[in-house]
Amino acid sequence: MSVEAHNMTVRIGDAELLSDVSFHAAPGTVTGLIGPNGAGKSTLLASLSGDIPVASGVLQIDGVEPRHAKPKAMARKRAVMLQDVSVTFSFLVRDVVAMGRSPWEGTSSPEEDNAIIDAALEATGVSHLAGREVVTLSGGERARVAMSRVLAQTTPVVFFDEPTAAMDVKHQERALGLIRQAARSGSTVVVVLHDLNAAANYCDQVTCLNRGRVAASGPIDQVFTSETLSAVYEYPLEVRRHGESIHVSPTRTDTNALGSHTRNLLFPDRT
Image (cartoon, rainbow, N blue to C red; front, top):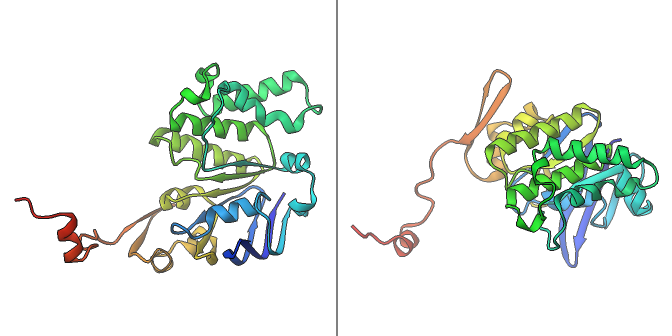
């Protein structure tokens, strides 16, 4: 199932958050959404998943416009991991993951559902937390539970919004590996990432947003250039290639980010 948007504009109130955006994500690929703060990445993800209405343009998941589909039908097509993974009720971890199976109620057996839930818990390394209340978990643990719920939904299209933001390095790598694995199994995966190095090495293609518009889009090798990223982020960035890996870093340490007057007010000389 592919995800397609053509000349899509999104408005909330008087604010135009996305302007004339076109986007494509194909089955079997990981498509990253990158860009500076406020560029529109989370808005685009929410629009593509059908959670935010589109003011104009065309949006389709597997040829179907989300606004014309029944909620349960869309829940069987796409799963969404939001940036905010907070839970205010005292659900058990296993119960939260089991919620991912609710769209398939009546179409699968309890044995099949339980096997999928167990596999999702094991994949993200939270099986040992299955009997804990979610409100007792750390932020990183909650993020892994949220990913488990999304995996348990077993949809052909999966959206992730900053899935690794709260995780330690070990679980970041594990989560990104699961995202790659989902794509390699044939799913269409779209993921918002702030970590440019993670995007460079785990995504097949990227769409780079800036001020609600597409600044660049295509395979990693085309988009990840020093010139393109430095222009979009308005900061000097260097892209280095070592074999098949790509590394992005600042070209210098910006020790003069503050003017002298501001610097003296905030950081007076105490020597």
